Length: 185
Image (cartoon, rainbow, N blue to C red):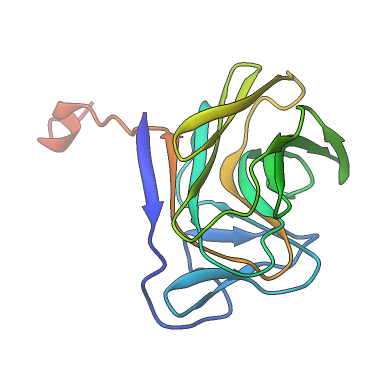
């Protein structure tokens, strides 16, 4: 499985760039001072669309500042109405599911308190098993099989900033050697 990442180190912009897709029913994220920042006070959803993802995947980023209310998302659908995500609300975090724009809490709250700049949030999914991690330590799990595929991304509610996003689970493209050498086929 491949890995993709974005450090957001580029000029300020109203979007994250060509590798990202903003959800159709949500605001998005832009670039401000080399970080990603939510553009609206409402729901902001983006997903990495430059690659195809396997069903086993992860999404991770570093917390910066602001009204957090956000988290990493996995198996994000093209229409952004379906995904699994970690929701961090400035004191607790939990695994949630969004289906057709409706929300269901899948795990117990983990009382993490206020996070500081540089701490990381991560969500992994393998089959129906989901795990949320804080600073690379598993702090909660859930099981759900409703969403089988999608992209890795970010879901938030507000204008919180984040940095150093990465995801695992991209499909590695295998090109037969004979095609590279022009041997037809």
